[in-house]
Amino acid sequence: QVQLQESGPGLVKPSQTLSLTCTVSGGSISSGSYYWSWIRQPAGKGLEWIGRIYTSGSTNYNPSLKSRVTISVDTSKNQFSLKLSSVTAADTAVYYCARTGSWHEGWFDPWGQGTLVTVSS
Amino acid sequence: DIVMTQSPDSLAVSLGERATINCKSSQSVLYSSNNKNYLAWYQQKPGQPPKLLIYWASTRESGVPDRFSGSGSGTDFTLTISSLQAEDVAVYYCQQYYSTPPVTFGPGTKVDIK
Image 1 (cartoon, rainbow over the protein chains, first blue to last red):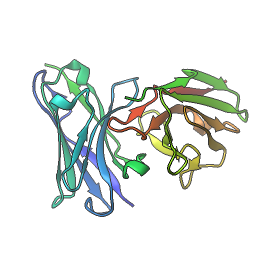
Image 2: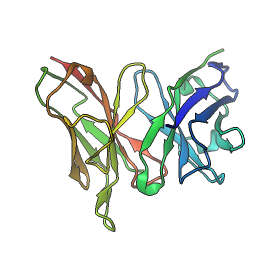
Image 3: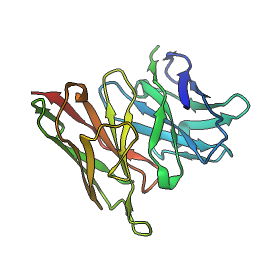
């Protein structure tokens, strides 16, 4: 079955750009009508959807983060990536990647295990 | 944006007893064309990612025990654990996918053993 794994630096300095990659295994990122999403969760808090990408490259972002977010896909590597610019301590969180279907099937499954990113100097 | 709220924030239930979690959306997530509610439920245990339990408000994901059930329509939904087991201690989230972007989640309900 499809599995997702996040990777990237665990520590980012304030004002810099957070960069994470999600590697998809057990299936092609291009197969099926799926969107690939990033979701984050500050410690002890709830879930915040960041954005998603379709394998065509079409993206949707959370308006609250849109000015700072870029999500891209590399089908040759079966990966998609997140860049979040101008980070502050408020961006410290566990970042998850997840798969979702079309609008009519917009639940998230599966999820990656998550990676903790701390913003600190 | 559709705002999701959950109640209670936390609850403690005796083993074998029923646990009920409520979720409310700020607008209807019922799509009239197919009569489906665009709402999902997740379970998150400490140190783990959320796990999909239910979609379409009441369809149980494959492999999810039948003690978990979802109900409701429009703006008011319920997740019921009919007989709480020790392994059900977790935080439970609802999520709407009717109006996106953005996808929105409820704030979570923590379930503990009394």
